[in-house]
Image (cartoon, rainbow, N blue to C red; front, side, top):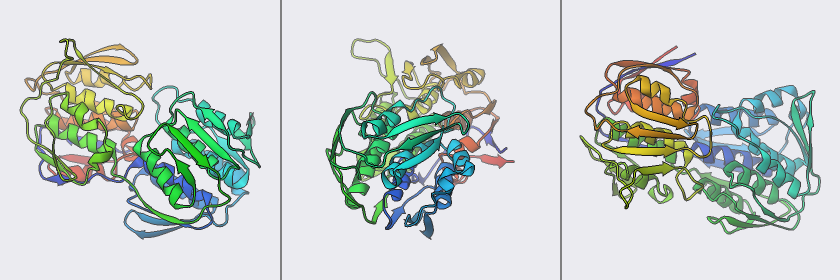
Length: 435
């Protein structure tokens, strides 16, 4: 198992370009199953989760052709239905959280699918009720097979309907959209997730011949069509990488340019960092973070302590709270970080406390951070990455620390960040990969 050896205290400089969006990639890759024609996807990041899903598509029978770096053509003309019932298919699904979004397109295309409980980050309970109830609303049935440890879905004749989602699940919304586009009649999804990546999925499907209206809102109307055709699609920049780079520049006191950041699709992410006192300038589609020796956390207008919390889009994505928490350890002032969605995502803070950070973990969802204002550097530490986002937060902490830190289990980081050590070393970091 690989580790990162990180020598802290190095300033960053120059510019860096974010990769294509991981979460969007997993959605649109599943969508290629909805047509027999070729779908071309550009700006795909070379990361474990995406590569594993591409490998899984190939095993299913999708023809995969690499056209250029990050650009692939997918043709799902002939699906291997025997493989879709195999133990190997279930095993691969079990290792990849994003594979849950295969249910919708396979059910729409084939009328049946067997699916194993997915793996992914160990960040607390991640229920699938929204996905499954959406399929039931469309007329499908499912049962759990104790022998296979898998779910069997059947839905030969999906029928459009009105549904109010119990939560604005991003992957749940994507799954239901993909099942609905080939269903008979009209489907209305209220309380739909409206993240930019869901919007991108809808745009791709519309380019393939689907009829989806309300894109960008939480009320989607989908008029079912008989078939879809091929299309071309380019991924947005990864907003989580953009936020991670902002955090790295701030905590190391560095000046950094983030090129082609996709500013119009970042929502309130830049403002969340600005509330920690970080200056962020916009030049065209680039974000420029000037070097700052100090950054001061804002208070609410009544003088009370700032609370930074995650929320459904257009609120703050939960994937960046770990980064914001680490950045706050070197700010001036205090902030309450409230992680509402996942009950285990803040447990990595004990490693930051070992590094000298002043953090009070109130409960599994809330942590109070008292910033050092760069008067004390974090200390070196040996850590293990429990998930993608905690892993990058640990890397950011190590980059600012006094001394050399070690981060184990970095395959978690590799799941979401492409060639991260080489890209960061090119702008001044000192990170070595050790097998």
